[in-house]
Length: 210
Image (cartoon, rainbow, N blue to C red):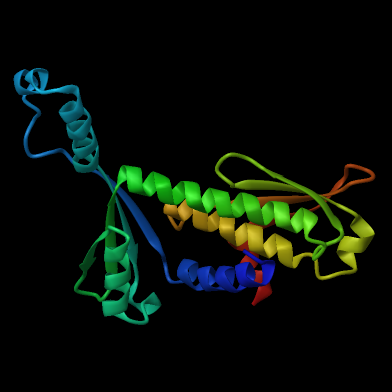
C-alpha cells in the first residue's frame, strides 16, 4: 500500500473515531454441551471439525459501525456477507458485524501486517527522508521515531506521525478498546543526541489539528 493511499484511508478512520466507532467483544455460551461419549466414539477427523465449530459458537466478536459512517446499507451488508460475516441492521441504522474469534484474529493479523509494512515503507521509501527508524510495542499504543531533527522540523515528514498514530488507534479499537480509553503515544527522538524532543498523544492532540 503506497503512503498516499494509506493517508487517504487513515483520514477516513478519523471520522470513524470521531463518530464513536464501537467495538464490542462477546463471549457466548453454546446452547448444547458436547457429548463426550459421542465425541470419544467419533473418528479423529470429526473431532477436529467439532473443535472448530465449538470455537465459532463459544467465542464471537461484534463490531458496530454507526449509521453516519454507512454510505449504502445494502452494499455494506452484501460486502460483509461475501467475507463470511454475519450482519445485523439495528434500529438506529447502525450495522453490527458478528464474526468468530478466529475470523477476528485473522482480521487483527491483517491490520498488524499492513501497519508493519507501512512503518517499513516510511523508513525506506524516501518519502520521509528525515525519519531513520520506527519501533512500536506489541499493541501499537506506543511508537518511537528516530529522526534527523533539523530535517524533521523543516519538512512535512510529521504527516507520517499522523498516519501511524491513527492506525494505532484503529488497531486498538478493533481489538476492543473503549473509545474513551484508547491512546497512542509517539515519541520523536533526535538520532544524534537521543533526546526526545517531541511527544504526541492521540486522539488528544488531534484537537490541535482542527
